Each structure stands twice: as C-alpha cells, then as structure tokens.
Image (tube, rainbow, N blue to C red; front, side, top):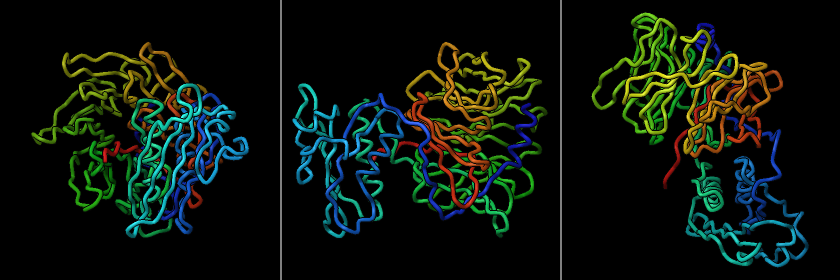
Length: 427
C-alpha cells in the first residue's frame, strides 16, 4: 500500500489559477461554541475590507465560537457603534466585539474592544487594542483582532494571521507546477516557485521564512530549501532513489526526510547546524512520512512493519520505536497537534478520512469524505487543513480539531493539493 502511495505522491499534483484567492464554503458549523456578537465596525468608505466580517468568519472557523449576526440582536443593542450591554444581553451572547477603522497618517487605525454581556462582566471592557496598518494590510489587522479575541476566550494564541503553502498546476502553461503561499483563508496568494515538473510536500521552517519541498525538475525527486522573500534556495538531498517527505523540526535545527539510498525507504534527518545527515530507522519494511513531536524529541512515521501501514514513534532519548495506532485498517500521514498529546492522521475506514488519535489510542473521525490526504495542523492546534475531493475536483478543506466546524476551499480555476500550515506570527 505504501508503495502505491509513494508512487501516487510523485504524480498527484493538481491545478489552480495562481492569482485567484481560494473561496471558503462552510459545510458544517456549531451551535455550542462561545456565543459572541461581532458588531459591524465603524470604518471609512472605500476601505475594501469588512473588518467585522473577517473577525466573525475567523472565529466561526476555529470551531470554538458561534457568532451572533447583528440582525439577531434586540433592537437598541447598538447605538453609533457602541453596545448597550443591558439590551444586548437579552440575545444570550457572552460578549460583544465593537470597533472602528479610521484613516490616520496615510493608513488606518484599527481599534476594537470586547464588552462583557453576562453576569459580573456585564458592561465591562474585557479587552481593548488599537494599532495602525496600511490599507493593503487591513485583513491582517482584522486577523489580529480575531487572534486577540480567540486568546481572551480560550487562553490559546490565535492562528488567524498565519499563512499556508500548497501546490497547484495549470495544464497547458509553460510552467504548469506552482508552489504557492497564501493567508490561511486563501487571500493574498503569492507564487514561490514555478516549474515544468511536479513539486510536492512543502513544509515551513519554524520562523516562517523558508520552505522545504520536493521537486522533480531534474526528472528525479530532490529536496530543496528555499527562502520565501529572496527565493534563494539550496539543494538538501538528491540521492539515487527516493528523496521525499521533508519535515522541519519545531526547534528549527533539523529536517527529517525519507530516503531510499541505502535500500528500502527509511527515515533520516539532516542536522542543519552540523551539516550532517543521520539515519533514524533501518527496517526491511517501508518507513516513510516522518513528522516531529512538538518538543522535537521524537519522530512519528508511517510503516508497514506490522503488516499494514500504521503510525510508529521513534524516541531519540532511548533509541526505541513503539507502535502508536492500532484501530482502523490503516493509518497514515501523522501530524502532532500542538498543545496536546493527540495526533491527526489519515485513517482508512470507509475510504481515507482525516481523524484524531488521542493518547489512549482511540480514533475520532473528523471528516466524512473518503479521499482525504496530506493533513496539516494549525500551529495553535485549533484547525486542520487537508487535501480532498470536492464536487469531483481536488481541493483543500478545513476542519476544526474537534470536528465541529467544516469548510471547503475550492478554487474556481483548478485543483489544489499538499497544504502546509505555517507558524504563528509573534509580532
């Protein structure tokens, strides 16, 4: 089975218009998340971005909020952009977000506050922030509002200002294969690399400045590392045979990969500081798809050493390998969920579906589709982006880590695959 997967990875790259934003289509929401009212911001005409809508959409996609539309608030809840806590409280909302985006010094000042609506918090300002942004970064400013609201209610950092990478193709073009980056919600697409040959499995450096990926430009797979801004790149591995599945360690010191230069595909890692390649596994079965634990002390990988593809864990401290998954016909493509002891995997049960594996080994299905692959987890552990087939075409999809929110990100111009979620932005 893994042999077929490896062969498929070498061929399965899909197409999209490189200049079109992905469009999110919500297919499943929640009613039990934090009920919060996001009031339309007072903003200048011609700004081009509805700040409150961006915030409301972000919070909905996290799976932890159930925003209340303005029209569902009692009459008199809002006057001149200010919330009347006594009236708005009748909606059952826990809090309300109000704000404004007004011109200042050639840009805009984006200010918001969160007002409590229930209990001892009624009428209290629970959070307040203001900052300037140029017009072309207003969406990022709106995502910053979402990040702060998310952290206020969950205690976790928001991941709405993060970026994703993915692979697209445009058949019939001179350079049909394109490695792209975009905001997590599909806006602000930018090409990183164009090629006449397939590009696969991008992975972000922890500081968000570089991508590692597999390219077939020399008609055989090779692993490259490329700077996002300068586009300068370095060839990391181009051994005879398979060079695949690069995975950057969270501490930024190593890149794991699958190589077959010594026979069967096994797991290796490249120590970036020492410039040394080290072997991790040595087994007659195929070992592939390495991914790091959050503390960089272990590697999870897919192996057939137990008969069928399952997830195993290699511990660097002990040098031992243990099997992680037992449920399901097969389990592939493990990704650690930050801030937890759980994994996201692709499991074979009534097709290939994205699932969460908890510490006790139990599997919780996150999706209901049947051709899912390449999951990647948001750096705060709240959401999973993955590749799937939607309305007969390859595209990306989102699901919250608890499975309560679901959405597709189809492109009007083609098909998309191999998503990779970038790191949190600290600034």
